[in-house]
Length: 398
Image 1: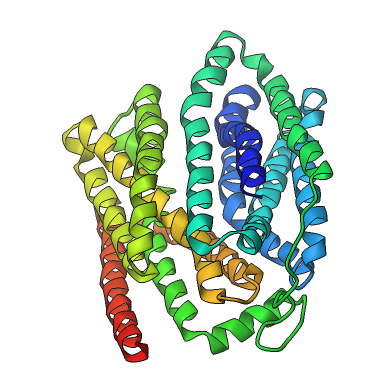
Image 2: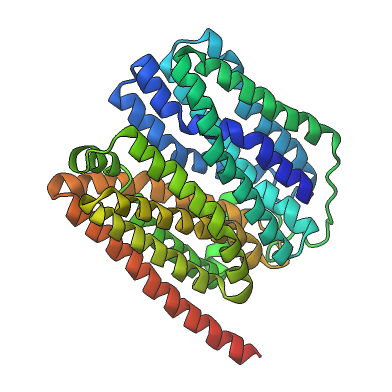
């Protein structure tokens, strides 16, 4: 299962990476309107809600996980095959939303597959390795396909077709590889069996106070980063006057290299500390990112350092996000916990960008970034408080 998961990341990541560039491609090649670009940018967190509902079909049904993964893989790549025959911008936006829905929906299912076969330490190592594969492709692959796009911008639709065919290869592999599950304790959450993800999520929030505290912590820290996202392009263009090459160096190269290089550190750190302590350090990096972004007016080097901090923060954040379900669910099914993660991340992603834009319209970038940094620091303090509480409980139980 470990090799299968890593193979999935290897063959599916190229299509994911080229989709990241879709917002730039449709702007340049199709003349997409600001409304269309805004909808495209907001669609990723919005589809997380759809993904969470989709996972209701596999909760309590281990035998449904493989068909679900096959369906996600196929639906995600299918629209790309029609790209050469379509000129409608809305079709490409819908294709992006469709792909991101299937990508997000497959996460909890893959975690459940790994959890059935691996111990937590081995699971965390596998997830971290998969993330490193994904980010390695994010760093290197754009250097290849952007070269060809510069030579002939019209080939972008054919590139999507090629990457879809690559992902389809994994569909064929998954089709013939059997997935076997240990059904013991897989049908029960507090004695209740249900495929209603909302009902099970509400039950978890009522009965698992530790998971609720973790969600508040994760929500606060992420809000500090998400709230500045719609303003960053304006800030980079109007205040810093950055070129595209400078943006690419910071956003893709520095962030990606930092993510990959910091993953072994986060992996080792996770084995030694609680999830709360892990998030405390993650949010320290979030705070440093905001600080260096503010300092970027003094020189481009501060922006580069800022995105090094961002990449390290993302690596720790992704590990925390993926491990929270298995850790808090213990011997029970982790799918409802992972679905709750999707709910809260999507809610945060749909609300805080608009809130950030509103604050910016009333003030300026400095005020917004200062508020964002304050949220990150608040989450650090809250994480330290939760970690102290956790250590006291461990001593009491010991």
